[in-house]
Length: 253
Length: 228
Image 1 (cartoon, rainbow over the protein chains, first blue to last red):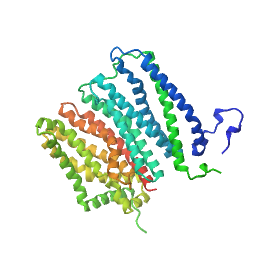
Image 2: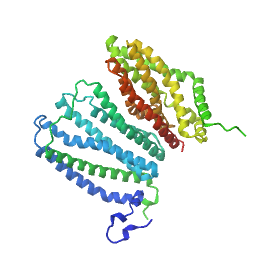
Image 3: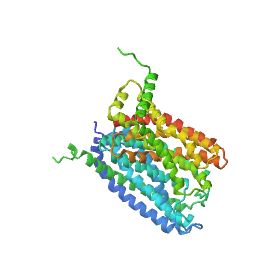
Image 4: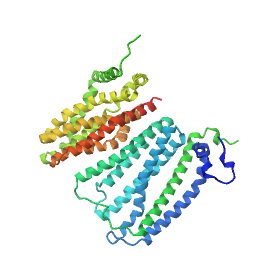
């Protein structure tokens, strides 16, 4: 493989990105990225929480209780985004047969499931004072719950198969099947919800959001994004050590 | 030199063989059937014998029970053929794996899904359903159980030869069954409240059509991974 980094200056187009598809070269790169991502994540989340909890105005309908959305909404975004990202890496793994892709998919799953759980818990904490119930069978809540089930299925399959190679591939197929199903499940639940229109609750008719609220939410989202990257990279490094500990790359000569 | 068989006749033989083998062990086939009847009978005992309540519950109860019955027999779809090496021979044949898989799915449906289509209206009578609802129940189960077998075969193929398969399949497959349940039970519910069930039935048909295209592909890929 040609080493492009010997050239003076960094020409981004000429960096051989595929080089980093190998666990051996990715391991040190990930190690360098983790502290930066983690620091920025902490700073952004602290700033986002400050904006959300102190600067943003009190909502005239929901009072102070609405402030949980600064955690809830970004968490819900990432629960879905990370599932699709996981499925994408799983698909890449199947197509290119690249081990690092499988490792990435494996590493993304726990963070995605964590955000799904956070979205569900914060949602029900918000629902109790606003709707008077911890849980309503709203289309969004229900599909978020099903998303958690899909993550659980992915973990369970991976844990059940002893052969790592097969576990990677089988769970990759499951992740892809799940990704195809996510929109179908969402629309079926939505349809089911309109048929059973009992005590209907809508999030859509909330008043227009103040600019500072949106800013707070976006900063929290970027913070969560960097947090995800940092945690996923740590997990990928652990995964690489676990799988490749007997290969030459960790030998101390 | 043996005569070369056409694809169609090979596929027909696979289907016929699967059904024949299963019928030699009738207790397995009957168990699914009886599970459905027994499990559905538990619901009135767990709630009340109020005819109004029962007929309101019936579509969901019968559909969920049918879904669980279909799921219970999934682990058998490939496991016995895998254990005695038949499955590998089938995969090695010069016929497309996708079609072979489709035949095995059809055999599973004939043995575990189709009987439910006939028995569910009878149980529906016990739940005080009207004849229009019973008819819709049978139609929705006819389309739905085939979809369940199709989607379930992916789960069965992924968990082939894995420890504790039964519970694992449930966790993998049940979330994927949700659209079928929603549209299937939804069609019957729509009739109950005097709405047109065609919307739900069309959506159920859409899910079936998509499953017919994608599920054999997914199952074939999963089987290849399992047999590597």
